[in-house]
Image 1: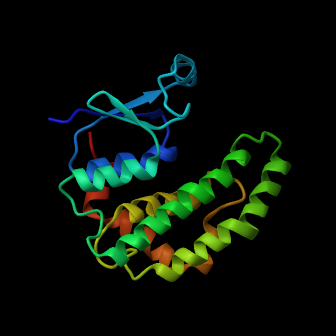
Image 2: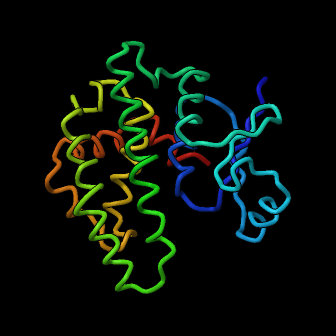
Image 3: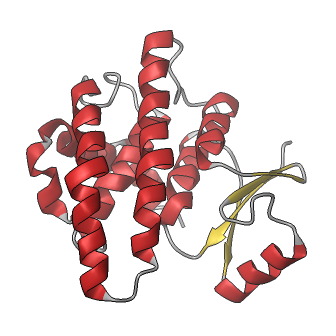
Length: 205
């Protein structure tokens, strides 16, 4: 049997969609959670291919990039998390790349900004530009209740976690009010929360 180990910090962050995808796909994996000193030790040892987390080890081989991990879970697992229709697959890939490559990278600098006034200024700029474009684009693609229709995909997992994050208020300057203009995305977040496999993930021992 394939041995999987996902390594990240003890927080949801960028690894949470991958954790959920692996669980929903029925794949057994070790959920390895590091403290910051452990991460620095790994990084300095050269064990992290791109010097960052998360990483997914598959039978001892280490891989980076969360979008690739999501697709691996979809292709390897028993659940149908990736569409066979090329156009639907294009929508899934486009949304994942938009949030992983565009939004996450542009959000990252503000995560490390300690001055709250500067942090909020950076968040306002993100919201006024790239984030609004991404949300508007995603809203236009959603067929309902999920991105490509009735089936949960890896893109919906990423979007569902994102909606949860906005609703939680943990991102200063980017709260639940952001979703007011995007009813389809908000409804997708509700459908994600109610999905039996997601409920089972949250209720796991």
